[in-house]
Length: 375
Image (cartoon, rainbow, N blue to C red; front, side, top):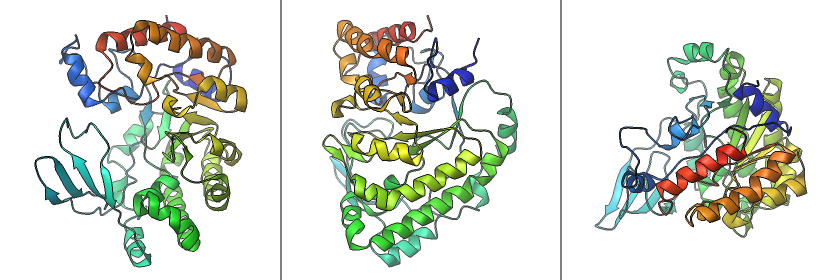
């Protein structure tokens, strides 16, 4: 019988397999609070994002692992509360971004809605000079002190390991974090040389940082975190992709491919379908999590792009809140045809919100297991 790792590699290669790994992204803390009143034992498990990404016994999720290398700016900015009242908190975070956050409904640092982004740390060339000094890839603290032992333990594993943690590295997403969505949109036209410099610095940083990791471990995949689209389409078009992003994507992928990594993912919410052909040209062969509210239907995408693009996700979280009949319709419409074509791992299209009950989520998990060949 195939190991989990062997099955994962076949799925990523677009091959049909008798079963596929069982993955999920996670649940909101507010969802867990609801589930405690619906049968989830507080002492039975921890359903936080990391434990769901790396496996979970209660849900019988398969194990994955992620290389915990520190890719953040160092030193970071000092956390600073700028303004606070009964409803809102305005603060500067360690990444230099100033946000306004709604306090009501917060649990464990997670809020019921996204923060408003007020200011970003890079506004001109002087602030960029300050920023790039914070990205020294050779700092000893970037690798955990147990790295050598971890690399040894991964030598004979039977599960896949991803280079870096989930949501760690992106090209557009890093520009947006430094500059902000609106300002980077203008900067593509007003100062393209600065955009190119930022991308080059970011690419150099990554390649130098992970050099030790790829010498020590044979990784199975690498995931670019981009989140570069909304319901109306991507935040930049194919022309800008080719001008600014194609070269750094190819440079990173070529470097990692030479190190033995075969699968390259892009993580983006929203409707980024217009960019998928360019990502595939750059070397991307898996796209996720396929947000259904934005029309990223995995059955349609498979027909359009073929088995050369593996797909993960695509189960509509909104349908899980509508009861068992809706869950059945959603899963039967997507999983059997995509299992037949190969190259698909189904899971919810993002973390599970608190309108989904614990009994309905467990029903979803059991039905999904049967449909993906795990009994």
